[in-house]
Length: 459
Image (cartoon, rainbow, N blue to C red; front, side, top):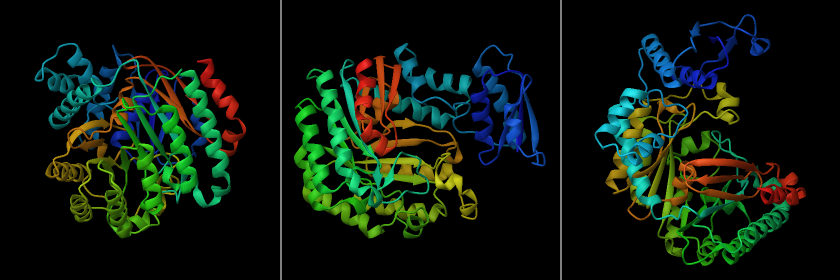
């Protein structure tokens, strides 16, 4: 345990994130002068590694984080590739500086000076920001995107924290769930008065966990209500290869879906078994082959760096397999220890698995993407990421995922339907006005669908 002593509440979340970045697997106990609300939850015999006194009387947050970074770096002997950037999208700063007229040489220096970002990551952030800005220029600022959430999955992966429910246990509810989603979509279409979205994204869970009849019914309604020739993309997460068959893929293609994700995460069977993905490596190959035969020409593959027992040799094997599959885009995630994921809740079950240099693994993935002519086009970070790295998307030219950039940069509103779906209302690009959240529980969502619609109508 590390005890953090604060004079007041100022910057508490920033201090927590900074300390956690240097000590990712350590319990933090925050104590304040006025009160100590957390003291009741800490055992009196909990061993304290050290106490950190944080002076919050500084000129600004960045100064505080730089001071804290220096102290923690001296204490641990470590540096962080992203410096003090713990709670901000890495591209947000270079995007802002580009708009203010800063040069390509000035921006990396500013990132290094103000946020202690390493030269390599500063260059990456700038390059991705420039790519994002180019892509966003094709999207009307007064448009919106449509997100549809399907919260069912074959099994729950050990690293997952998304709202999802086991498909086999909720199969008898899927028809009613699709009914409720369609009701919400029709209400959205009425309120948008015929204005069509720039992009459509179906995520989850795994949308293809729906029976083909329900998936086809939902996609055809989306096509009828929201599709037109100006649509930039329609992506569907077909992430689990064990949820895909030819009939479902043809239904997606016939409805107008232009991009799908088939997500291996790893091409090592032993790792798939550890993380609870009940399918084989061979299933991944079959899914890709089937999607190509059906006619999909834009397939994304997700990988995760830092999975249990995944070192350099295992990742090298995965990357060689991905090269053979030749996806049009590749999204590489650094493992993030989410609070309600099994890997966090039952951490002791995973502690004995090896963990190797996260930075090296990300470099290997970048080299593999480059060999496929896939260029970085979007970038984001989360708390508790392996090796303080990032999540990054690579794609062929003109195969980039628009929605990925739009939701990260909050360029325009995202209108969402489904249990656990979050609508984000943006008044001007980059300025989030409000969030509207649907209830997560499937039964509650079905029962309270009129209330979910009314929440949007009011805004």
